[in-house]
Amino acid sequence: MTYVVTDNCIACKYTDCVEVCPVDCFYEGTNMLVIHPDECIDCGVCEPECPADAIRPDTEPGMEQWVTFNREYSEKWPVIITQKDPLPDAEARDGETDKLEKYFKPEPGTGG
Ligand code: SF4
Ligand code: F3S
Image 1 (cartoon, rainbow, N blue to C red):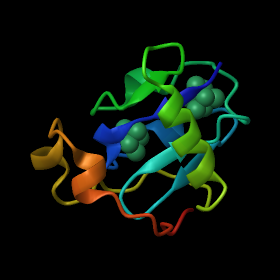
Image 2 (cartoon, rainbow, N blue to C red; image 1 turned 135 degrees about the horizontal axis):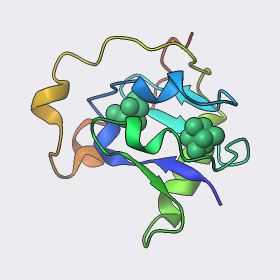
Image 3 (cartoon, protein in one colour; image 1 turned 45 degrees about the vertical axis):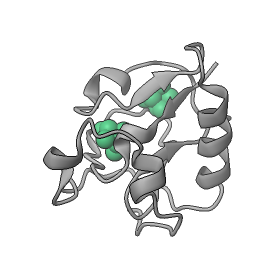
Image 4 (tube, rainbow, N blue to C red; image 1 turned 135 degrees about the vertical axis):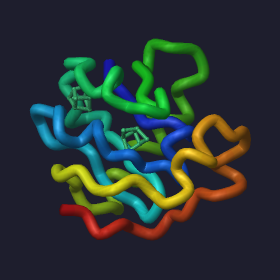
């Protein structure tokens, strides 16, 4: 089992989640984070920290695509262990539909 970051992180990127992860398994893209599914120890402490409710356990229905997505990008993006300011439009974008199609950027973030 693992936890994964899902589409409501996109264009929000609050980053509250990274401060609580005991194994530092969050990775940063330009406008979202992902979790490395092989490094996550399923502790669950990050899930309630996300203001956008974007972190889900892979036991929920429909999560297979997000496990694949999190694995793919965690191998391409730098690790992030320090909280940063949310993206400027975070509040406005929180809860929008089709964020993957509308806003996702595959380029790496700066990490740190
Ligand atoms: Fe890190 Fe625990 Fe969240 Fe996995 S469930 S990403 S180990 S805080
Ligand atoms: Fe994203 Fe939520 Fe973390 S919006 S950066 S998963 S706190």
